[in-house]
Image (cartoon, rainbow, N blue to C red; front, side, top):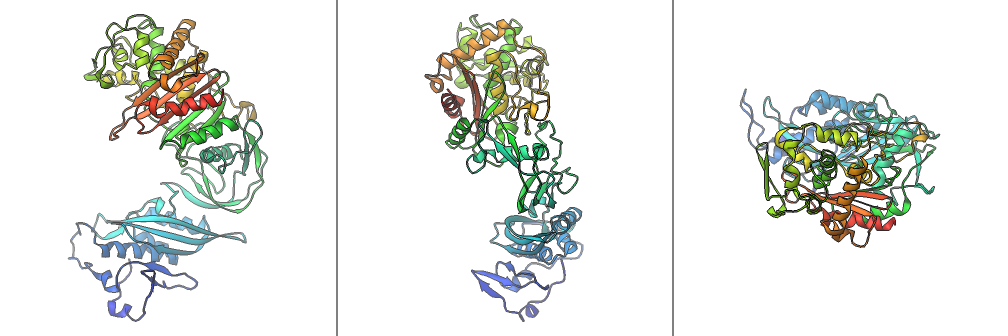
Length: 572
């Protein structure tokens, strides 16, 4: 933390007031000014005295926040890694990250400017120069730190997080400058047009994933750049993630996104990768997701598995491919196929839909506590009756739903090879109340729009065709297969359920005018601490299948339904 100078000693150098802030030159040749906020020097000493052997407690004062953040930022700017790390609550981690900032990222001439704090949080701007083998380029970004009390003595220190160094960093990530291990790519749509984020903003994470997987195979030449190397990356241009994605998959939701380029010092020569994306449908998908907050959608071709469009309202994470969300009643497509296979339900047979149904100690109910007296399974499916499915839990084994999802719909086996990282759905074996909840897309079941577009496509064709973004013959990868197809009887009944739902059920309003070769299912998934459920919708028309989710959107037919239906109309 360094020794404090008395206020009288500090008074010998008059600080210049700039925009309400006090600019003080930090010692060291060639270093820029470091901007401090707040009052005079005397404030630094306010509340600094403490009894010997005591541990400070209580809320941090503004003076403590300023003192701790100033000590850290001043030391970092001077290049005094030891002092900067000592001003945090995780000295080893801070030392490693800050050392790498200079030695691996090659960032020099660092200037740090603190801005107005908010409580214990202090935003600050960073300016510097990235220098690598005679090539220099300016770097500027915004970051933030938080001050906390150190556990052992209560002294104010910076709460160490990798994101303090750069907001794109997470634990285990590094900043590295060097020759990029993965050359840039020029991604093309199915018609040969270039795919760029200027035209298609949602494709940022997709293009990153394509570069990571195909950069070295597409014939390009790497440039020099500053990159975020995700945890587990082994060298400065390896372009590796925490888990190898050489088959284009991302098995667990805890896996990292692809490495990310932050600054290009010199351009490389891009290679070319052709995708299955349709420029018309991709453009329509981009437009549709802007109509709702937190919306994601995917369009696939049921007969082949080709991905024709993918879009998200937010562009920082590809929820459409990598999201892990409870799918709500859209999961009833899989459950219905299971019940029909086992002879527990049939389209036109009377099927119970009571107001309540209990299993495993939980009491389940329908939306608005409705019931259908003497109704058929088709009527229950079309109205999305929860109890019609919960009532059958006692007839099913704990692993029946898992097997159906894996063996027929190709889900939950971590073996999709799409061409970029994806989450392939999860339908874990569960028991008691959680097993019952899984039947209606709650419990431990997790999906994303890519998974649910594939589900309705499988229902349409009867056979699982693994979705893909890049043709498998580009890199000789094998696509995932399902163990078996739907039986002819089950497929016929399942398609009838979906058609009736699109014509006269909860999906009818959104799907109006799209028949007769169509089918759909709505879903609403409850989420803890969320006022409105996530709204899901999945449907097919002809040789197009699509699925979408609007987080906190409410009922699926009203939230995601118009987005999905609009895309089916665009592609027809």
